[in-house]
Image 1 (cartoon, rainbow over the protein chains, first blue to last red):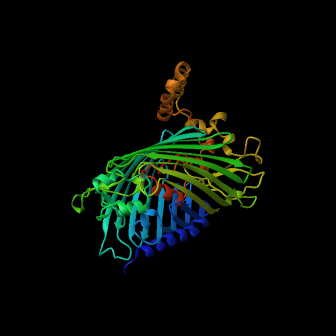
Image 2: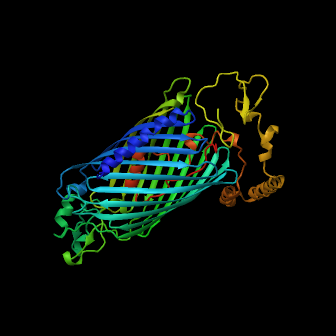
Image 3: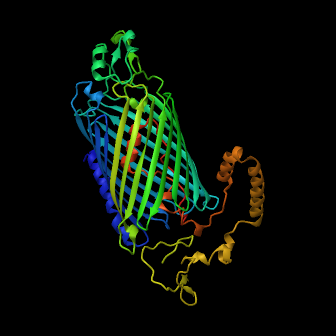
Length: 390
Length: 151
């Protein structure tokens, strides 16, 4: 019997959720079930609706945990990139699920996970494990992990057997978390990610211009200008077939008299020439016994990959640049934004934390320094969740 | 209630006060005299059964020489920092990370066990996906450690 990716996701989710009941009955475990619906909308006509559910059962004293999660992404897009190719608005449904389990009976433990993501034209499988070691009387935790990902990239309504490309990803993660005092801890982690395969988008066409014309294409040039200026050749995107990505992340968490402050900084570099910095700060504080408020700010800056050009030039189909992209997220950009999160405990007076409503709303502004079609983007993201603990 | 190797237990049921405490192990029982109820200092066993009041937990204390070394280290660092605080801020942070600034006993980890103090990312699935798609960078999402150190 063959099992479809969709079937595998459903079975994974059901097994994970079903696992909750007998474990909870033992009375020494904590079970947490959470549902969330998030919505995304931006000014380049992309909208996403994402219902998600997860269940976790754990025993902090015995040192084991198990989690299952499942989500559906409903994406609708009519961005200028799509309009410029005379393509209609499209809607896509992505399903993703996964399980994670860990066991750490003492100072040494392991945490493993497996994830599946599927759309009509993209299948992604990821799995791996992380080892944890407590040292210095549990003041220092060292961790190291390896995850392998296998993606199959296809085209909508075309079987993978007819057209597909593969992308393999090896991710290595090492780091430590250090307790500084009874209300402060710091963490540092390093990631090395090796990607092998062709991850070019099979739908993304890159406009090409005559050498004298390319220099005249302005930042944010409209689809009409692009259509009237480009040469007839319109090749698909072509990215390098290998990429090594490196990230170094530091975070400090402190719980003071007012609330919890979390600050995180990530430095990133890769062999495509992209360098980036991401700063994320969150502050959580209690308003009364049942309400927690968490303002959030995030800033991201990056340069462009080495083969990035706002307007690629060629005399004809014969000398088109070997590497070319129209992916704005590979160009230079700045993103700044933030929002507010709320957690309202609505459980009974005897155990208020047993039931909680969560809500978050964030807004982001992105400035694309050197892209055609759009110069900036405004994004609104919101999420509403319900969490039960028993 | 069953306890683990570290002596910790998990219970979500409310305990009616005052309560009676006894330890049962290998068929033997040892009970505390009288009844107990939370005081202004809390109702944790460790309010009394800690290194600050002596008792069995003292066996787990670090050797005196290490405490002395830490005092000397702190004294040196203090004088050093007074004279060159701005330049040495980063060094101090690194020293804390490498050697630990304060010993945090298991019964002092209530704050570290708060959900907002979890060392990993607190972003939900939708928010994580948003960052993956919007940023050319990746990594940094996984971490471990912290928490109550319950086992």
